[in-house]
Length: 160
Image 1 (cartoon, rainbow, N blue to C red):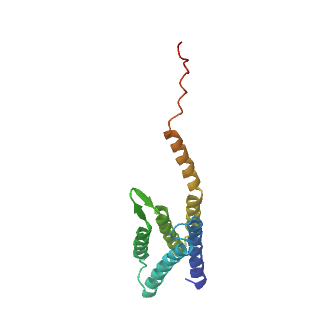
Image 2: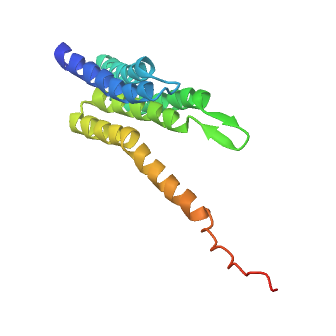
């Protein structure tokens, strides 16, 4: 593979990670811009290195194993982000964003640009547009749970 194609794949992976990381950074989540850029770039690098190494050895590429290792490693990172306090679970979406960044990095490393870009756009929509929809649904649910106001009692004057 020519060096410029490797560069395109690495840059695309980094940009996809930056896109996701920007959203996490903007909303003050624990894994931000640099973290997600690094996850996407590292995933792309692992994939490209596995493909190049097997090609250099003259054996059929076994990049599926590299991908499985990436998924497991990123799952470990994601588990470190998730917090639980009493009955509340925090930062699950950020952990999922880490996985998404890794997947986008692997897709960029494979050279499937249309999958990388389309998936990246969908991730951005999910992270930036859907929170407003979730808030709207939550507000409607809260309104349904509050009992309707009771009509006032009729005023009965005292008997004389």
